[in-house]
Length: 561
Image (tube, rainbow, N blue to C red):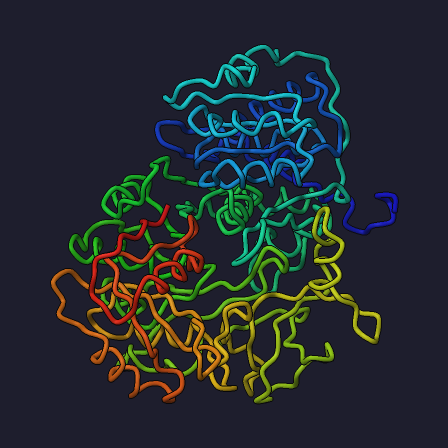
């Protein structure tokens, strides 16, 4: 279908960023380590990336992979790829050789922008990537992979003179946006969007009651009027949460602050937030929120400008919310719900009412206020009414992806059409509908525990476990059981020196959960391992759970970052 057939055709991400740059050229756009880039500077460097790629033979619509930690060059490259009319491919910097081979091959990437230390892993799979014909290498202190025959990033940009008459291709909202997501099982899959749809579904920010932007000029004028808010984005830019929050700030004329550290250090991050006068903190669940608030409680005068904390990917638990409230009672706390296949669907107030028991409300997840395009569907793809006790699957219609790139079978399964001809994007989460129409999140369907015919949603049990004062983190998952089919199992990290055992945790949960939901087996670890964005690492947890149960043996995890 030609771009003119779409009402949102002007909304290419590159065109929107250029419009904002024209409106606020001298505002600081990005702070990353020692680098501070204004909108003018970020646009100029991303344009140089675009010219280099086009000159190197990258054609509009072709895919360019991006393999780097959080840094200014990540955003420069991402915007430059878009400006060249090409499609960025996010690559997880934790991938081993086989996973890199799959993503670079499956995405049909023709070019790669990578940090030196990460590019070394690509060397071993280069022979399996016949489409990959160009490599840009970003210096990061690691040895350069000479066998990749890559060009130095800064040298490539310096060769593109500002007055270069080279014409870049036009862009439109029909251009593609590709987001690879690992999920909980199987190979990573690329979720393919139109840029106009991802703008509407995940990136556009507007005040309550404000109309949607109709043109790039509307977006630019909104940016010129806005308060120049500063957000510290802790989600890796290679994943949806970090990427969407950074883009939404940039398309509002605001400031994105990213940490260039390779590890999660609560002390360094709170110092960064304090130094940069950050107003909003974007993080992912308790794994990030707890150590940060503990640091702030130890130094309560830090971060006087911080007024809001937003969590995405996994909800904050009540005990952690209470900790944030004890640091600053008027802090705005919110959980954001969404996914790679659905975009941002809604938010839930993550506050704890004064006098409320922070360990309560563990039977249900948070109640999310969702947009009109979001529903909870039954098995026939019919929306459940408000107040229904039936469990259904969260889904979105309207501005949704085209499907999974290079995977028609998975596309048909996740993006079905109902009997009325309406197309849906199914999330992996199950929920019920509250009396007020809100969505009550229960948990991931892919890891639901079916124990003797009863369904148990892991997030519900995790919330109960984490309400124990000595539990630092937990992952709940199904394990095979000869008599029950599956049993509820937990991998738990407790405070250093805590004398908590399995029976104490089970007794704690019995007061909050029905008996069949209480973990039958518990594996204690020094630290719960999570993914780079702070989500549960179910593969690791499953391996740990199979090693043995009901012990307090130290099993190493891996910190978030």
